[in-house]
Length: 330
Ligand SMILES: *[C@@H]1O[C@H](CO)[C@@H](O)[C@H](O)[C@H]1NC(C)=O
Image (cartoon, rainbow, N blue to C red; front, side, top):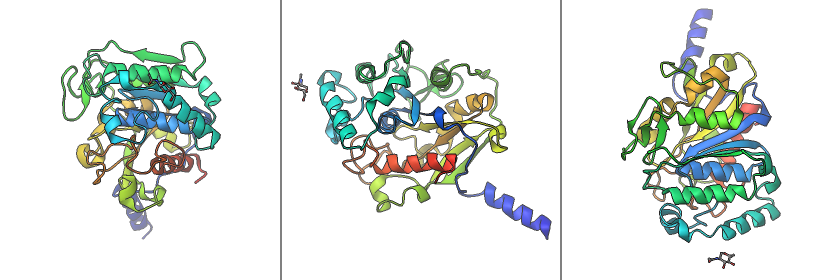
């Protein structure tokens, strides 16, 4: 009887979506990263919660609030025409949001670690847009060397890896590119420093599991906020049994959500192998396609609400609840 119970419990954990767990993580070592719309969202999350987020890794992303709530601005200026981006307006919005308390004071960004990547062959979010993102951060980040930029890899739009994906300089529908460049390691190393780099032969040792996301997004009718009912979490074995670990959140790009790539973004971008050797827990929250968001992008133009780029945004709120769960306060 006892054995049967154990089997049933294990089956419940292995199948389907389990509850996101609480782990022994350092609250002062929280960081986020993303590709494309995921990078724009990572920026929004970091600016909104700069008191809590000490580092960001941004691949092919636009500046904070670049789209200003407008889809046309998102696909035009914020992807292709950097000369049309007026940073003064974005700084103004940032300051107004600080005043209204919907984003944390910008002084918190002074000590942030920022990693920014743009491939020389990226024609989807052109390098000029990414350089505007760098310029945006330079207004707030003080420490010399705190912002690292990589602008010399001949990569097309996608997540650069050192072992998986399509040809580095060509478009491919997964947006994961084999560039002989381990972006996951490089960005995490810039953020944390002193990490062990996994050899290309390293196979991830921990568990990648689905967790129930719906419990974090009971905020409005589901189609409004564009989130899937489940996300992925990667937990290296030592973090499972109580070792002190660090939490990193990785946001996929458009057309890379679970509904399209299943677990490929969470499995092949290279984060998990770095996580193994450095006791990092990686959370991969998942967006979903909806009528107003047909490509399953993270909200960086306002499809979920006008407050999308602040602490009041549905997606920002939901992801923040996930962090609190991992820390044990939600
Ligand atoms: C940029 O925005 C600021 C503030 O709204 C405005 O004063 C300035 O004229 C704008 N610059 C350009 C080139 O449009």
